[in-house]
Image (cartoon, rainbow, N blue to C red; front, side):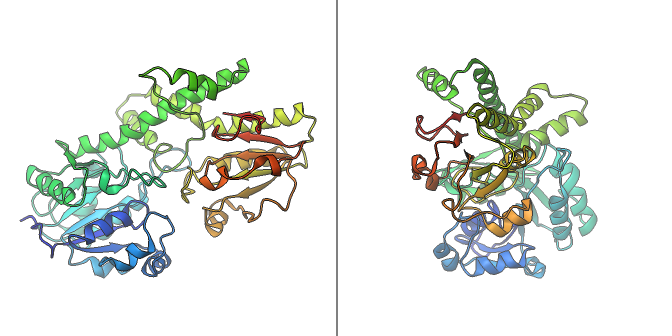
Length: 423
């Protein structure tokens, strides 16, 4: 028998990152919610009112009834489990399901008759029922759609975006049978102000998530390719796009580095599934190819500008501003800025990285980069604005830039007369 949607319904959210934490807090307003994460240090910080992802305020954390824990036993009495762990790609650009399968394994150990397991992590179509359900069955000894049930409701979190937040983004829902789909839809409808969209199957919901970001990736790859072409023509891409945007139906995407946990990852999940079925996706992978080479283009352009200005490259010093994957967000996962840093070093250039939003310890742990805290202590022959944090936009680059400094703007947000090159 499925659980009832009542205030005493106990819901466990597994994974308290960008997706799981806001979700757990939202559910705690209506139900008995438990937020679980393997990282004991993260749990300690959250209990103290500190959310390192900057998604939730300390006031909201401290005033919430959410139970935050790293003890697996605290999940045993839950009736609904929502899994929100990361699903990245490995070094070969293939889906890395280790965290997802580990979470399925741990929940399978405590799964009971009538329980529902909801997945929110990005996957390829079919992953929930083909990869995760067998783990749940094996560990629990229960039968799928007889003893326990599953659902998929893809996350649509946009880190650093104060407008498009959990409650005002339409939520796609689904379930392993009609009764579960109805209950899960009503469950999310109770916390999502924008409403829900109930998909006809788990696989449809999975596919909808996969194509959302694949579509953005392809669109961005188009303007990135335009930037490569217009550079050879010595045409300013930003001005071309500004002119084209005057047409009512022009899609005004902008060129740039495409990283992060969604746009830079999800297309590979869709491509992986397509290839497993014998189809080689040309458009999706060509878009990925273009976007993955943009860091190299930026570095090569900067070096050419330095040579043109008679600036010695070997032994020179560069300042890279921003290491996160997007503006106004501390998330450094799959940041393409690291590719810029790596290539600059290969040219014999000493590199300083500055980003007041990223955690220094985390950046050092992930990328072996010891970030600087003051951009005024050194003279730089190259400055690259890699991420357009609001804090950077208030800087007077006219003052920190020397006559023999190349300033490159990857986001086309700085004053045109300040920069020597931009995307």
